[in-house]
Image (cartoon, rainbow, N blue to C red):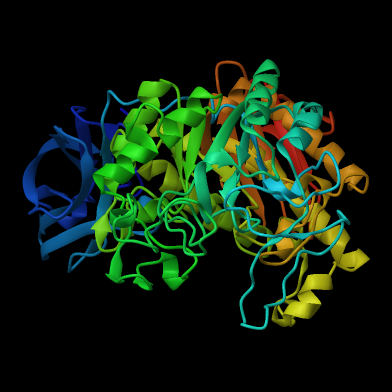
Length: 634
């Protein structure tokens, strides 16, 4: 029998719940509880309710003693995917009691029903593609990564005049115009051919997936206000440039993932045509427009639903049949077209604002076009139980999302390195691991920085007071040398965690080169070619090599050890290797014991052999991380 829990129930211990975490439909799930014998428990009942339904009772049988505890067990078999919640009731000598979820998955005996446990049940026939999570990703903001020449004012249908930066190192425009608007129409001229020129650089980082922020024609430099889904923005290049990029990338073992902005279009777009720059008749111009019914007009033409009330981003009616046909249904629809030209997947912008059925149909169309196509969702919270607009989402129950952006990991890393506890970090990750299907957990986009967040170095280096600086001061701010050194040390620790957790470590362009910056647009400055932080870049290259060469880091099991305070300690295990990751964010050295007779730090090649019958004894210096490959059993 498995080890006896130290509490009545612990959802993460196999002695209490088997198998661990999320389960496929049709899988028998064995639940066992262990009340202390002194409580005089007579009956225990497991209650399971599918989301929004009445709870069903499953009486638990007594199976004998387990030390000083009784053992009660029962089996529940979910017959279809869904989100289920469960708890236990007990008849004790002191009267009826509840066992509900406490901190860390431990069961608590209480007088009234508290937090219920979650059980995610998914479709066993749906398998997300594994190629993404097993590799390293690189996130490119297209206008700011690399250009192959001085920017030239683009021409063509629908193209608005643009403010061009001759100087690659300029600060992006950040002041509002006379109407109080920040137009985001200044461009630095990054191109697809510029990316092609830097494929050797990406290869040196062992990148296997290039994820692009939007590349389609749009008014703004961020291009989240799509003007034409079927046209590459003329400043970026041509469709043939995209084909060549995908071919060249594939020759280096890299895939390309595109950003799909399907919740809204641009005001200045072929479909809405609010500025009248396109030859087509847009929805803003005529109710006879072929795209009129895509939009939610309260009063045509100027009152319509828009993303977060921003008039330049008119929302679409995603369930409109003609819209779905255009985006993914037709043979040459947007999703299919770019997959056919070489893309390998799509990241769905604001996925929590897209209907589940829309995502499900889009996924099916993508898989029909390319069976191993990847669909990633932008979700900032625990995506397994996300509620959006009062609707529970079904992302992971099968056929919707293959992955999401792992913002919970990013937030936990920043919080830990800025003074939080290792316990909190471990609990955050264990909740995600418990709630997500394993194939999804190992397929997550593990980010530290994105185009929506301040740069990692800045987050790890600025003081609380400096966040209160005015916009002008933030635009020109760089960390003073002593603070920069501290932030660089923290970023190295952050990268170690990012690269050793399951999922695809995803580098936001320039983070590896020491780029700083507060919020948008300061987090979107150009890559500092020729002015990289060489020491930091070398560290990232070392990490990338370790991650790319390690089956254990790509697919191995994860187990948190006794992490507390400033020391984070977890293991990655496989048939090939046993790794211990030790991250000490504190200012004092911490003694640690690992179960081995010999260990080597894969970052520095330092060797540790001070072993006894308890294992190898190591002292982790302040602000230091080790990735230990361990050998032997004490």
